Image 1: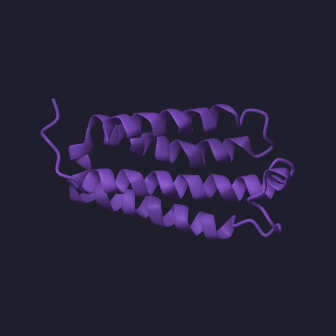
Image 2 (image 1 turned 90 degrees about the horizontal axis):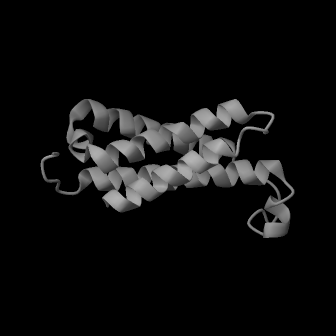
Length: 119
């Protein structure tokens, strides 16, 4: 799971980097930084995810991401088709929130697995 979380952290960092020229890039940089930070925690200090406060914060982050996914859910017909999301910003934003939810779910699953003490 460590390598998966590192890969997902890297992916979120790439998502942050490509927001530099977006009109609302700062808000999306902040949105993508949340799962990036949780992935780094899951990769390097997974035992923290089993403590009450970090677990509650992770669940709050996941709940906020689900609310964001509902808010940004694409209303464009056939939003999953590449010719649609390539040209439609709202479809890309909705898909971005879906990815954030998926990444946070993987972090949550990582935190629920048995863990050896961190070095």
